[in-house]
Structure formats: structure tokens, C-alpha cells
Amino acid sequence: MSHTKYIFVTGGVTSSLGKGIISASLAKLLQARGFAVTIQKFDPYINIDPGTLNPYEHGECYVTNDGAETDLDLGHYERFLNVPTSQANNITTGRIYQAVIEKERRGDYLGETVQVIPHITDEIKYRIKLLANESELDFLITEIGGTVGDIESLPYIEAIRQMKWELGETNCVVVHLTLVPYLAAAGELKTKPTQHSVKNMLELGVQPDILVCRTEKPLNEGLKNKIALFCNVSPRSVIESIDTDTIYNVPLLMQQELLDLVVLEKTKMPVNTEPDLVRWEKFLYRLKNPMSEVNIGLVGKYVELKDSYKSILESFVHAGSDLQCKVNIKMIHSESITNENVADILKGINGIVVAPGFGERGIEGKITAIRYVRENNIPFLGICLGMQCAVVEFARNVLGFTDAHSTEMNPRTKYPVIDIMEAQKKISCKGGTMRLGAYPCRINPGTKVSAIYDSLDITERHRHRYEFNNKYLMDFEKAGVIAAGMNPKDNLVEIIENINHPWFVGVQFHPEYRSTVHSPHPLFKAFVNAARENMLKAAENEKE
Image (cartoon, rainbow, N blue to C red; front, side):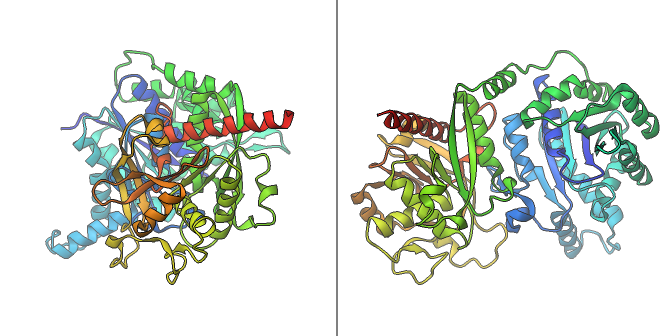
């Protein structure tokens, strides 16, 4: 029998309170005490996974090593814990119902009427326990997406109720995240929303063990006692989660509030050591005490919602801290860029990254921005579609293939320098069918990226259908854009470099998925360093 302790993190009052950050912070504290811990996310929407969702709907789609398209919170889990997640770490209602229906069709239920209780709740409990059964875990933290009281969350809350009853109070702990709003007109923090949220939980048969209260003002002892009294928890179990300037402060704030100690007490686990957070504190010190700064332009078409590029933005935080350099990100909508205004829009920018994406909208703006930085020797990093746009730009403006394009945007182009992968041509179903997950790449010796990675064999995560068309590779290499990295099995171009430019790199993969607090990605570090050098050079030229 598994010795794993189960921690459930639920949310009330409103969405977007930060359940993922609280889950990751608690996991970090437990990990820092020497416990084996992982986190999983249950999302109540009926999509099988977020792979087909527009980023405006749900933020970025995060990809794991094993090719799962998952919720962006899994990125937080990996960035905080420095431990890879997998398909089993993100389950949706769609996947739960799909599994139950497949069992019913096979006859697994032997003629039973298939119902939400027990069949859906049993499947939820099975998926919760699966990670614990496959790994030697001390703690498994399960974040329940959405807000308590939503219809779609009911089966998950019922599954938690059953698990608490089956495994006992010391083996299952419920951490409920709520909001304590500040009413400026009254000059008061209000506890009633938290009371109502806990009442909703009680009506569903679940008593929260710990309340984490999001607030913009400190909770005094009187307010904590009031919440404890009316919500049936001890004052020690009312945890303040105050607004902060960086998510990376949250583990330390939760440590100050003794969240990890309260969890250990409730689960009857030993308190043998203090959390070892030396590396984390050093990371925060460097982040908050930069010695220099650079301005990076992020060119994309979903810039109105920062969560659309969450992993890229966090990768710059990691790289900036490592270099003790403040990275100022300017979000630039690719649809706003034209030949006439590109110089004004990119004025004062020390480097640009052109972001991933799908579809034709904003493509020409990306291509225009890439031409400008290529011709003006400004550092460039293109990721996935960003690399493909760089290929199209070079083909049009250097090789003279004026009609060059990707067949994703123009199936009839005379010069399909980016084309659909052979393995993708017969695929019509959209969900989960791209080239997904970790693939190897062999880097050519003597290239910039070989020095950046300090290795010739790397593995990176992918999410795409289209690829560099090798038919044109010789034309590109003669003109100075080389294939710096190739997939050794399928001979696919994974990395391009412009050897006539100070720092111009495009990658077909997503390096942002592998950057963590303790392991900043080398490409982002090298790019930030190149942008810093470009800034210093520009300053020297101005003096002259």
C-alpha cells in the first residue's frame, strides 16, 4: 500500500487567485525539506487537453517531455521543482469521461448503469492515485482547476470527499485558496466571501483543513481568528498570501506563514530539518539586485494576454537572474508592425524574440521585424514559427524568392521554404497529432549554439507540423544561413544560424519549456548576453 500523503488545492470566490503558484510553492518547501513530492492538475473543462484551445482562452499550452499538451500550471510546477512532469500530471474532465465511455463500450462495467457516482468519481480517484502508485512519493499535491461552486467542479469535490473518508484525515489534507478583498471605500478587508466559499465546500461534504487567503493588505490576528472561528479551522491554519512583486517570493512568504509546517503536522509527518532554500534565495537576490539591464522586444500576436507566452517570459526571468541583468520585456503586437513604422516600434530595443504561434494573422509584421533586426545587426531569437518566419524573410529578401512562404499560410507558394512534415500530410484530426515532446538534435561543431550548449547532442521539446524544406538548404547555406542543428533520425533542420550576423538564431523547438529557476536555459542566457553587448556597443557609438 502506498505511503503517499495526498494534498488537494481547491479555489473559491474567483478564478485566477494563483492555485498553481501556491501548489508549486508548497511543493518547493516540502521538497526543500527532503521529501519526494510532485504535483498534478485536474482541469474541469471537457476538452481532452488544451492543445486545441486558443491562447486567449487558456494562456499558453505547455508541452512535457512525453508529448502531453498540458495546462500552463505544469510549467510553474517544473520551474519551481526542477523536476519534469508527464501526461499523468494533467487530467481533464474530457479525458475522464473518455476513459469511462471507452470502458463502457468494452463492457467493463458488466451491464451496470454508468453514472457520475461511482464511475466518474472512481476514475478521478484512480487518476489521482496513479502517480503515487508509479512513484515513491511522500506527497502528491493535486490542484483542482476552476472554482468551488461551479457545476463542472462537483465530481472532483465529491472524489476528494470520498478519498478523505477512505484514507483518513491524516492522509488527505485540503488546502482551500480564497480571496479576502479590500474595500477601499470602507477601508476594510472583508472575510464574508471566504466564509461563503467554505460554506459551499461544507455543503458538498468537504471541510477544508487549511485556508490560504489571497489579500492585498496584511491580515491581522483578529481577522485570522474571525476566519478560523467561522470556517471551523484553527487560527494557525489560516495562511496569509499577500500580493507580491514576483511569484518567486511566494515560497518564502508561505514559509513565513508556516504553511509547510501546518501540512506536516496535519499529516503526522516528521519535521526533521529546516527547508534548504539557499539556492532559491540566491536566485531571488540576483533577480532583485541587477547590475545591468536590457530591453527585449517580444513580437507575437497574443500579446494582450501575457499568459500566452508565460514560459518565454519566465525564461527571461531565470536568465536575467543568472546574469544579474534586469530584462525589460516590451510586448509588441505583430499586426501593428509595418515597413513604415518598424524602426520607431523597435527603437531602444536591444534584441527581439519572435514568438511561436499558428495561422496567418500577424505573419507579415513578424517578417518585417525580422528583416529590420537582420539588416541592423540586432540580436534575434526565433522560436518555432519565429524561426520559420526568419527562413521566409531570408528567402524573400536575400535569396530573391519573392513569393517564398510557408505552405501553412500559402499552400500555392512557388517557394515553399517551410512545408508540412511528411508524417503530417495524411493527418486530419487536430488534437494531439503534431510533432510533440522531446526529440534529439545533433549540433554542428564550430557553430554559435555548440558553444552555447557546450554539447553536440541535445534534447528539446517540440510542438509543430511544419518544418524547414531541405530542398532549399543549399541555397540558404551558400548565402550564410546554416543548419546549425539537425534531427539525426529524420534529418530535419532544428536550428538555423546566420553566420553574417552578430547573433541570429532560430530554433524549431521550444527552449522555454526547459528553463527552470535552478537551470536557466543556455539559449536565453546567451541571447540576453548578446542583447546586453548590443546595448553597450550602441551606447559607445552614440558617444563617438
